[in-house]
Image (cartoon, rainbow, N blue to C red; front, side):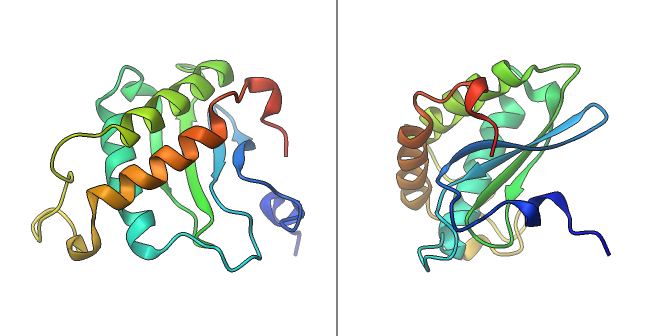
Length: 152
């Protein structure tokens, strides 16, 4: 079998940041890498789940909501994937959107979105403060990121 593209990236050298993972027709996937892989310093389940709820809510309610296809965690617990419609959002606009959204996540003021048994199958491990802390960290990592830095 062929190795998939993401397995061809040297994860020992991959630093936290924002990367272009793939393009599938009009769908672009960004790799929002929070942690350096293979260090044991992974996002906890609660951190990942909490960031997912806040950022997905902000993206799907934001100015580019019609371009957002998916936002969710990586199984390796080192970050998230953002899939968007490249007909509606350019790479440059996506970078700016991610920066704005994580800054808004760091400043989020309100109850955790989807924190009930009716809305989420694992609502117990959601924590607004964990999400805000991780959003603030990542916002700092990507503060000066540009479209030119999207290559792995």
